[in-house]
Length: 200
Image (cartoon, rainbow, N blue to C red; front, side):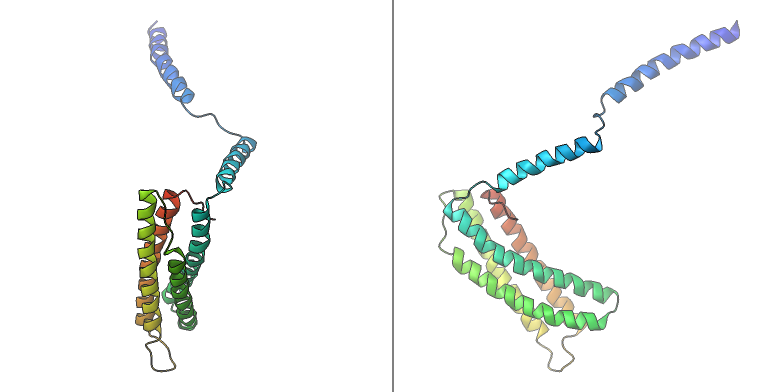
């Protein structure tokens, strides 16, 4: 009799717990099969492609064309800077020196491209006050890119002997380019988002 009472008490306690567990399971999103996930991703990709293919007006189209040149130049500088940082961490002096020479050339290229982009968009205007402010900020970022990349060239070209710049000078140049690249990329991202200009 006592055993029967224990069993009944146990069932009374367990039943509400099963109900709660069932409620918790019902609130979970349904599991998707790999095919359903692929279909959902394809739908999202199609929506993004549709947005990216929306025609741009003349100002936005020209702006996108001009900014991509500098964006790609800055990206090349940052990629090389990352290679040098990795070489420094593994004490690969030969790689560090050779990539530093490459970095100097890329800094000069980014300096030229930022000047060309700044010149190309100097006369661009938009009736949208927010868009105009974003343009002003991006022009300021381009000016900083030109100045920073010029400093990078000076730092890496400061060595008077054939050995080239020291590790400290290379590190200083990397700090310079990383700072101006961050400033440029942030300003460009704000400009692109604010003016609805998709960038590849």
